[in-house]
Length: 403
Ligand SMILES: Nc1ncnc2c1ncn2[C@@H]1O[C@H](COP(=O)(O)OP(=O)(O)O)[C@@H](O)[C@H]1O
Ligand SMILES: [Mg+2]
Image (cartoon, rainbow, N blue to C red; front, top):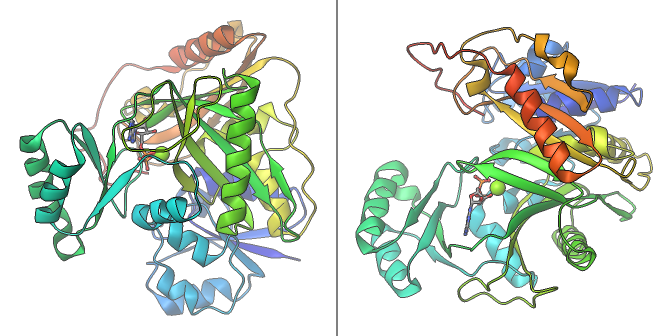
């Protein structure tokens, strides 16, 4: 029996495990959080810090291969284990550090938003003035769901960001500055690249964010065929240039105006920029559970287990919309009232992640709807989500951990 070790035991890991089990293999989970969803749901999970080598060794011992569902993992311990990690730790180390990731995009000649690096608060302030306003400051490490990034419209605001970062980061100060893009749309594209270097590219997803957190994903994206082809080609080249074996999600910014200082040839009047990369299943890819012939989780399971990956094609002719259920929907309740669902024939899936504690912007679940056109798919997702909303009743102290 093949055993796949999964680093991180959140919702992405849970859904990946289901896909691995569907191919006859077993999984084991490792997560610093003992109450993480997949640790509670599946047998044999272990909990401990990424730096506890003895623990990691014991975890990896029965496993044939390791993969990961999160990027904020300390790789030093993993490096000393004698086991294959898919995608490789080199890939993970590039993508878990925004500066390394952006340097990679630049050296590979991939279209990206021009950036500058800063390694001290004084550096940030001087270079920021040089760079021009408005700008966005992003910490090199630890950012997700908009955490670790700040907008500065002028020098005063930049000074405040520099002071804040000095407090937060101390000697580990490292961040990128980039221009604010006038967004026409955000899209993402998942590429599955197998050990034999064969590549499958998923359809392009359109993404909308609220407070920097993914709100919904729509597929197919409302972009022209030429823009979709450009996005897919860049996603494929990115996975190849990075040498990914496994999954790579590339997030893109689409804009009608060129981003300050950035190079890109527009297609159908649209400038296409790579924003960031994730070498793992991605929140926007939840929609593939229903929208495509195989899901992102099926694709990664097949690669990890050495099975060929068929082409992921769209099911049917309609539009599919995934809406995140953030903690706000749950508002301290542990059960949802499903009474209002009977009237939603567009409903395909309500997935709850089984997190023990809610927090206002924590990802607690998602819904997927399907309809004949984009507007109806979006409206159906919103109506379903609306019918799940409960009366706010927040605990006095929100739990500190968020994912
Ligand atoms: N340079 C930018 N211009 C305009 N919007 C941005 C820019 N950078 C980030 N954003 C917005 O913030 C969201 C989150 O930023 P991102 O860099 O993807 O970080 P993360 O997803 O890791 O929090 C983006 O999806 C986008 O909506
Ligand atoms: Mg992002």
